[in-house]
Image 1: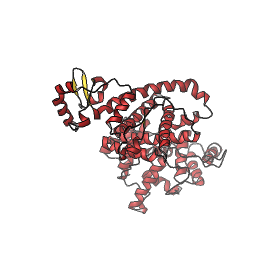
Image 2: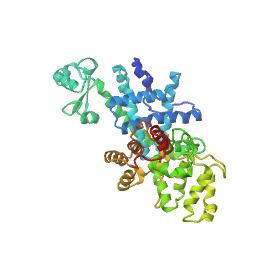
Image 3: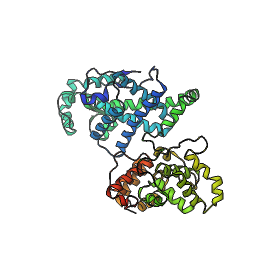
Image 4: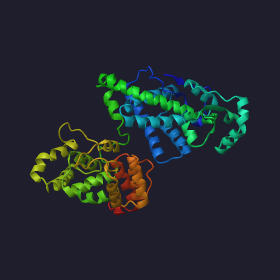
Length: 460
């Protein structure tokens, strides 16, 4: 593992984010406890998912810089500096294993890690360290000589001023590089181009380094996938493989296996709270159950565990499902074929496992077949059906366009978050990560206005 160590300490505000900025060239020879293997990866995943949420919300560069600093300090800090470095390196390579396995996973990880690296590099704020990083990447660029600089100096000063750089000091150190090596700078018109070369200011070299970092990581992910499928997966099938194959869709929030706030709901409440506080995925299942008096296994599991998490007791759950299914299959058949699985979900049959309500990632990653109604509506609904469902929830036209746009661009959880905000007229900065979180946050807001109307949907 090649690690770049700062020749000059970065500013105090950046120190906790930068410390030593690794290039992740090769996996380190470190012994890692299995517990740390997973916990380090989860902490880094929280950082990457926070970055993903920030980007999908359209945060500006300075806002993203603040967000990255906060996320890193919250999840990647350690009392001992050497352990911060180890945690950084270990967590990156664990997630490289996790996200190398499909093209979609690779694309997401590559984008988030590149964004993280970009902001950490910017926080270095040290030309000396930046030059060291360029050397580590073996970038073949040299600073423009004073003699050549004289011929274009006036133009470079104008460019520097136009993009908010000073016209002295480090900002007047330029590298001459082929323009195709800095596509983002060219696209944003932030460089002077002459005869096919771009003159890149010292404070813009992040573009050069990030391009190299992204290229290296992209190739490394493909190679890692080959190693994973050919040797590692089978060799580690009883130890690492289960961890690696579940981390990408793991839920990182609170445990909703037991009712939390605003429990319990009873049979007489369920119709009202479904209208007021169920997220779209559960509201759709509830309505289909009422309409068809039946749900297939996937739908029964998704809705049943959600109802358990919001406080529906076992006896009420049995009565609820029996009342619906009896319309189609009869009471006797329900008792024989369906009652067992409901008791099983409550830990009263079989291994007596306390099953956890499904989180958003699990619901989004499901693949419902024809006739199924589970899964995430923001992913699985047609645009026409999604608009109809949102309108029924009381989402206005402007908010609906934002929600549909996020769903179209595969930001499903953000689409759900925007739906929540539109229905409740209140922001949800943490984002929606779990249907039961949606329910609890909804009930909190409704009960702030009036405890008497907490079970009534103010928007239909």
